[in-house]
Length: 124
Image: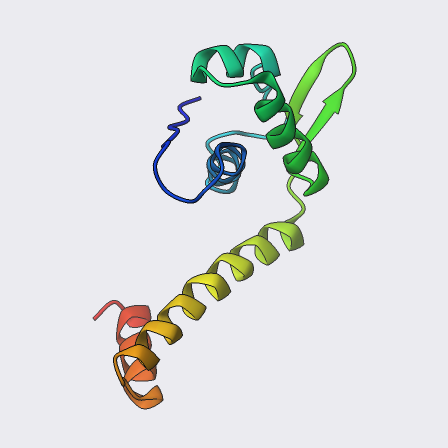
């Protein structure tokens, strides 16, 4: 499992881990039941604190992406398709929000944005 940590930027390290593991799960690169590295091993590989990996795993478990079995480790949870859909919708909403802010900043009309979105969606 390849996770890249960037020390620059505003995104906390634990959140970078959460985002990247979610992406691997959503893309199907980590299948249901796949064991994740132990918190200690991941911390060692990434050269970060075990507390940071613990926080990332707790967040992933809270959001339903992984399950943890005491003494056995953490595993990719079964995908609830509604959960997957909600995650995609949330990510799209975040990106569209950024796009709307940028459009307002650049004095781009709603109609222009809508046309651009339609062209992008249709792959033109």
